[in-house]
Length: 215
Image 1: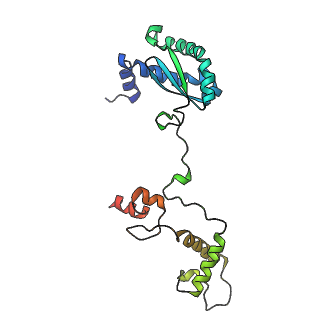
Image 2: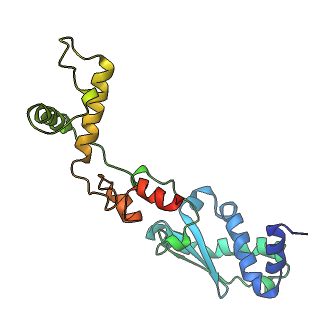
Image 3: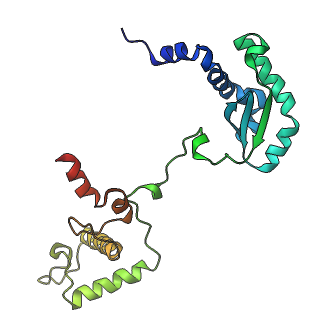
């Protein structure tokens, strides 16, 4: 019969060699309670090594200020650890070191920041305000040269009435897409304009990448 993962972890961490890891996990859970919410927002415990707790701070000012108060924080932590693990000799937490060095280090990040839209491989930056001028130029060029626009998006020359609003919107949307794609690199497989992020990640456009995964 399978046992829950947390039960297996508890069995492993109850072995003597895992005492330090147990202590550090408890410190992470109790940190805000020990130092207060304001200090906790600017600090992050990063490790427990040779009886010393290392804590990252958001700035050197916080590191200096908390360095003066480390003995008070150490007493609170030692008291809570003693309640959990028994005698002070088993706890063996002797000092706290504060440093801003690892505040932004990915290996010590305990929070998952929300990914931004710009990080998506298919992201394209918005068109500048001057894009309307560019779109107008494309329209003139399409009407006076061999640049082809989709026939069903252009006004029907057999009728003198202006195009319906829906068709105008479709034409405007298509022109914006065309303007946006003008300077994009081409997918090496299908030769379609492709966001640079897709080429960096898959060496082809997302549609071609999907085909490779499917077949």
